[in-house]
Image 1: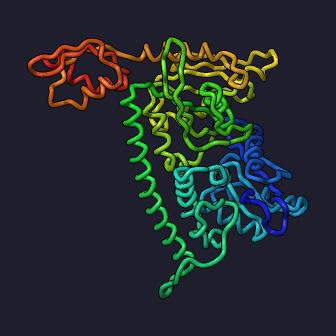
Image 2: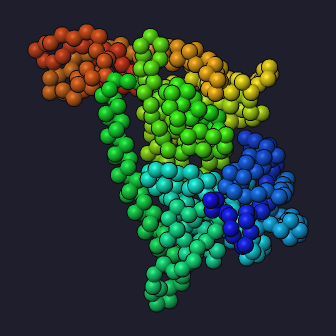
Image 3: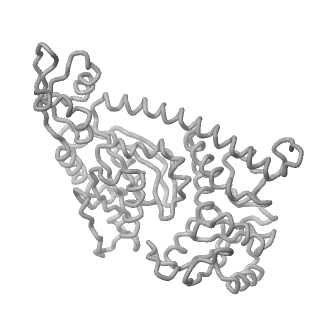
Amino acid sequence: MSKFQYIQGQDIDRGFLIGVSVYQEDPLLSVKDSLDELSLLAKTAGIEVVGQTSQNLSQINPSTFIGSGKIQEIIEQLKYLDVSVVVFDDELSPRHQRELEKRFGEKIRLLDRSALILDIFAQNARTREGALQVELAQYEYRLPRLTRQWTHLARQAGGGGARGGSGGVGLRGPGETQLEVDRREISRKITKLKTDLEDVRLHRGLHRDKRKKSGLPLVALVGYTNAGKSTLLNTLSDSNIYAADQLFATLDPTTRKISLSNNTDILLSDTVGFIQKLPTTLIAAFRATLEEIIEADIILHVVDISHPNANQHIEAVDDTLAEIDASRMPRILVLNKLDRLNGEDPEIKLLDDYQAVVSISAQRGDGLDDLGRVIIDVLEQNKISLEVVIPYQNGNDYSQLHESGYILEETATEIGWKLTINIPNKLYNQFKVYAMDEIK
């Protein structure tokens, strides 16, 4: 059940969307396309969109985000359309949130794009790690925005951003307001969630260390939400990971062993989908999950080639990769959903920082052999050969090379193992200190 359902006696909430175009700003999507995407997000969250509007502004109103005249016009529409939820297409500041709640009144629930995305994530998190990550992001989003409508949330672990709860959160001290109690309680919960997630991060790190010892290359799937990453993983691994034609169908990372041609095995890891204006609190909370991308040997950036905003989706994902310091990693652009093109030839603005481009249909299996060959080629391109001497006391580094199959030749010397190794570029800094020319 959606967290928006059964509020105020309605079977489903009726939503109204508001977008803004600011003069001289260069948005990733036009206000129309961005509102269309927001409408899909609202539908995913369980909101029936019954109206929308937008406004062109020279600058954002510091008090109410949009102009006062526009607010009055919207209020009249809300009454006529019997709206219960208003959703802004941008993240509202705490001040904007407070002022707009006053203008719209108690009967209207006010959300922004970030709150809506956080609610969808809360609905779709299926593992303890995913639930912890989303809950942390929700609390960090809510803390500076606590008002009368946002109080009493501290007991709603993982609850959606659409509504407040009921009931208190402890006894008040002398002169202490309920708002102060709630703020302190949420701050305490944030601290506890960060501690729990650090434990998850350490546990995930142990799993990564085990994978490294296997010697199998790690390939990470990234892409805009609903690009077809989970479908691609299912097809390549012959598994049945949940995949649906909807935004953020899966959140929790999944890794499978894949056999490519030429007897090459890899580990393929699916990660959370990206979207424009992804809440910064969410990126921070999903740090442990996103480290799967940073640790990968190759990134497969999957794109829905049939989407009219495919170029903008590529840019949004690239921006997020840059934000997590993964933009310099080897990347392959995978143009998916060829079966939906109907003979059309969309124009894709290819970027120089991709080492290869492959066209596929994950649903039908078209082009997957080509994708496998390209992955193998790029893995080889991103290896470097070194002659090293590893002192016997540094047995951990020797074991890593041996267990990963990176040693081509080996000779025992008086001071250590003399090796010819072929390693991924990402390991160069670790082993360059043993290089022959530097030892001399």
